[in-house]
Length: 190
Image (tube, rainbow, N blue to C red; front, side, top):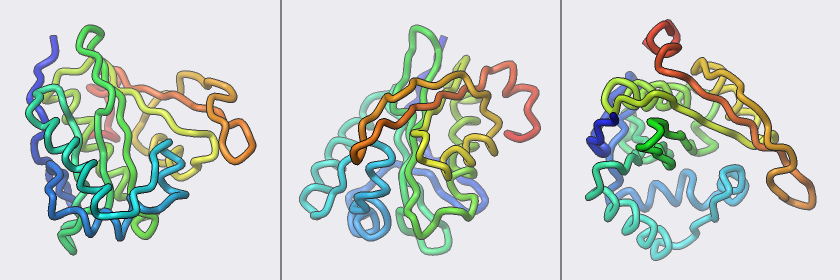
C-alpha cells in the first residue's frame, strides 16, 4: 500500500527540490524550458514566453493539491534559481510503482546534479511513498541521461524499438528499474 504524501521539499548537498513557485518563471526560461533541443529529448515543447510558462506553472501548482502528485523544481543552492525539474510523472497506486522524469538545463549538465536529484527522488519514493518499483526511461539518442541512469543503479529492462519519430529518424526508448529489494541492498543510493 502506498503512502501518498505529495511533493515535499528534499534537500541534498547542492540542491533543494521543492514545489514550483510562480517566481521560478524567469529562471525556467533562462536555463531550460525554452531550449528546443533539450525539451525535444523529453518529448516536451519549448516554452518561449512568460505567459506560456505561467500556464504551465498554473498546471503544476494547481496539481499540488493532490497527495499523489510529485513534481519538484530543481533549485541550485549556490544561486537559488530553478535549473530544471524532476518528477514522478507516472504513479501507479494499484501496482505500487512510479516513473521518474527529469530535465536539467544544458549549462548545468555533466556536474552530477541530475544524478544527485534522481537519487534523492528514488529515496523519497521508497522511504516516504513506500513504492515497490521505481522506473525510468530515455531515448536512445540521450546519452547523458543514460549516464545518470547507470550512476543511480537502475537495471536495464528492455527497449521499445523505433518508439519515437524525430527529425526524420526513428529513435528507441530504453527502460530501466529498481526494485525495493535492490534499493535496500544498494550502497549507491544510501
